[in-house]
Amino acid sequence: MEAPLSGVRAHISAHLPPWRAWLALGLLAAASVSCSKSSQDPAERRTLSLKPCRLEGLATQAQCGTYEVFEDRAARTGRKIPLRVVVVPALAAQPRPDPLVLLAGGPGQAASRSTQVLMAVERIRRKRDIVLVDQRGTGDSNPLNCKTDTPEEGLSSRLEESGAAEEVRKCREGWDADVRHYTTPVAMDDLDEVREALGYEQLNLWGVSYGTRAALVYMRQHPERVRTAILDGVAPMGLYLPLYAPRDAQQALDRLLANCEADAACAKAYPDLRPRTEALLTTLETTPARTRVAHPRTGVLEEVVLSRRAFLSQLFVQLYSPELSSLVPLMLDRATQGDWSPFVALSVGLTENLGRTVSQGLYFAVVCAEDAPFYDEAVVARESQGTWFGPTMGREVLSVCADWPRAALPQGYREPVVSSVPTLLLSGELDPVTPPAWAEEAKRTLSNSLHVVVPGVGHNTMGVDCARTLMVDLLNQGRVEGLSSTCGASLTRPPFFTSFAGPVP
Image (cartoon, rainbow, N blue to C red; front, side):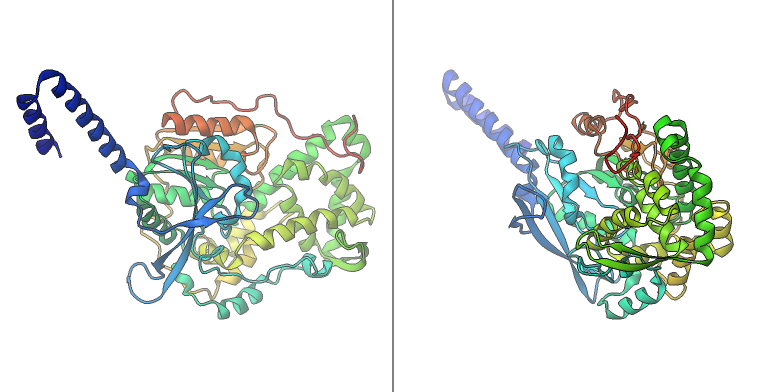
């Protein structure tokens, strides 16, 4: 473009009167800038057709489309699978050219069904598009779905022991998919192809939980396409799912019980809570509890049988949120006295939400390829020793993965990701699955990063205003220098419920 424009400028200067030449050259400059700006507009380069759509839980209109990719990306032949793509447009008339891309957790969550988290990025959306791509195997991208709970199901089916191995084998027979091709590295190449189809030169990545692993993999495979990265609830390449979950969850539970013992109201309401709970677990190991409780939705009395395994699997999930875990001492106290109603009420809402949003098949497609091959039963036993949660989760994964079709991984896949991309690492102080130590591990090889631990917060920090401000600041300036290294210094764990009426005033 430069040579032809130079010639035009010379012609104008030579053949027009000075005042007209200045005017013409000014108009030419404006046209040149306009042309340059247009070339930077992602919409001008977009090849993927998007249509107006509405997402559940999102008040504003979005743009949706479907992009097909080869299931076997290496072969580039055979079956194609659809990827659901959603763009929530920026509010600005001239948005920034690099969007924020949500990489959802799980593995198995669908980005397009995680719309509740978009409330955390309203300030970012003023200037940037928000992009949601359902990872292959989730949402509307050839989902690898298994059993899905429905509100009408009885309590026993919700709270029974998993039996995941046999259930997933049956589900796998019905999938129109080669599960060897549903790994994180493949999905991140999908994302880059979608990026190009949407016309974006660079992305700002926002990984949440497992989505932080996905973000790290994208940073390694397509480093030139990443402007910034936000990793919330960091799962580095050294974290094998779910190998360390019993240890990390036990640390969170021990802290919760210690906080209760140190709180005068909680200690008075629930004396000797730890030994009483340990005695309950010992009993449940050999004699599952049989009880009749009212269904939280229908009010109908139902009989349920609760084993130690079923009880602990629900307790594990209840630790994710400090707001929910503020009810855990009350729940444990009542359970030790034979009243299981609080436990059931807490558990049913959680299992309903997980059943709607997580693809169980994609979870195992990822874990059986990327995690389980790197540990065995002996390692599972070692890492869970001394915890209440024990080796159940790890053994269940090994059982499912024993006959899972083996996927290929890039050489050195489990090596730490080395990157100089400006990266904000966010950790919740009370996180039971990705505590701050994991973010510190990731930070060692991220040379341009900042790690901020938010006190009083569990798994993921997006609900805290100062964490959202840090995200905005990173995207606005494109660097971590100058960002605050603290967030929520005055925050503490939510007060414990000492009765159904709530905490003591």
